[in-house]
Length: 133
Image (cartoon, rainbow, N blue to C red; front, side, top):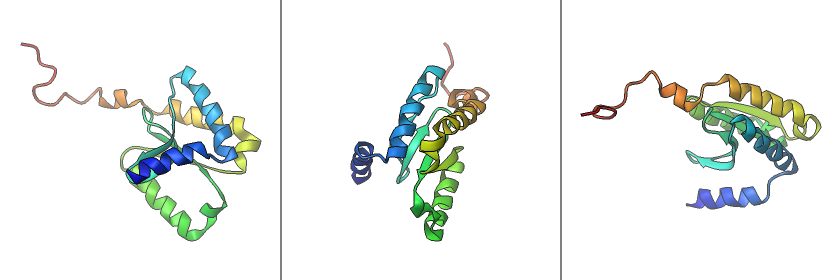
């Protein structure tokens, strides 16, 4: 439960770069891309995530340049990669100056990935489901 409270607190005090990116990511809903912000998943808090396309967007501050922190980021990215997610990382400084390019890159990456629904199309339903009597 503590991670949920922490995620809520982070939503209320996003960095300026996160807040600016959030405004633009919300606009992508018109293209069918829905993002969640400060979303708790598997013991981590993701800055932004499009669950349908399995894309995570992280806005990294200077602390992520530290080798120990960078190693933890690689471990975290690998955890989510095993579940089919791709993680896009952008420097805090890049977002305010190049927000249009960042959003375009995120949009293109999302639209290039299949939706979760399409991932399941070729799999038969579990035994007993989908059968008509």
